[in-house]
Image (cartoon, rainbow over all chains, first blue to last red; front, side, top):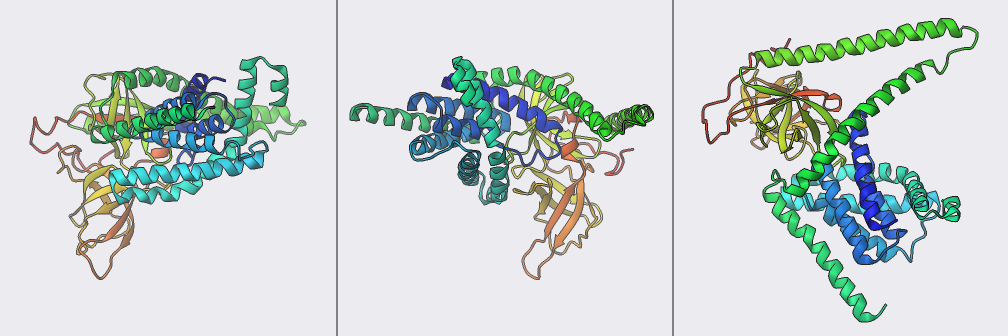
Length: 169
Length: 293
């Protein structure tokens, strides 16, 4: 799947997530779908560094528009996550569901801390109180990671029209 | 990969990462401004989002009805089916009545509010737990809605319009830590500033700058003071649920539970207040904090 396709998938996923969250009573703790897409892109996805970073910035920009956050915030944090994921891709195994849970949980904690840190620097120390959300969001993100990764593998295999890849997914 | 190519790639990646940083710095100063691309994406996404929300609500209703019937026994299927159908009908009517009641309250609020309002429907909520924003679809008057306008529901204050794009707008909830609303506790007359509590998943808020000498107690109403010039006076914001008064310091710590259930918002009103620089008079008052039928 090309990085551009990832951006399109991110758009669809964020639209869907925002709509479902509107009727779900638990929307204050919800997985960071954009983060999962970027982690998948960095760890498993194809493409060069420049292409992938550009895709991560676009996904981050969309996440900013959907989250109501200052534009550039998620673009920056997801760009950093993508670079970190690419740097770690040759050292990390993310095949089993447990590995995906652990890796995405750690990535979500780092991402949440980065968001809280950046918003604190913009809006003062009060924003640091949101640190309490980081573990809950990380757990929610990690719990859906195996499903999201599986779906992305299926979509990728379908786009490639490769039956072996589809079976493997 | 050769060294020079790798170095070139690193430079490009670093430059790409510097872009959102610059964008972020610029955006923090003027968060309400949307450029053409922002507006295009948001306007393209919002109808899709509204359609998804409607579909999800429908699926949710169908799913809940199915769950009601899961444990039905075979031997009394006909009776239980009949019973379930009637119960589903009653539930549907009850929901419709509740919804009608909500709309009735909203209409009554609209009639009691001496200022012009625009109705809007919630079509989406924030996709990040770190920000408390809801997306609305406006019934009309999208050209008249501007960032900063107050948003209210039948229960009380919802928040302020953060940005507008076509017939849609984002609302920063009163429970967001970036929100600040001037309030008064009618029983004591004490004034303060209500802000969201970061990291709290119950949408609770706290009152800042409320003097320690004001004898605020749990259960006290907190209403808008109208002094900041944006919100009408006497609009319910919530009830005091926790008071921490220390033996030192000027202020006390007060926690407030919102009057509006932000998790169940469906319809709201946007208050068309005049901009402060055009009209320096105080905003009009609502009858009472509990003046809603």
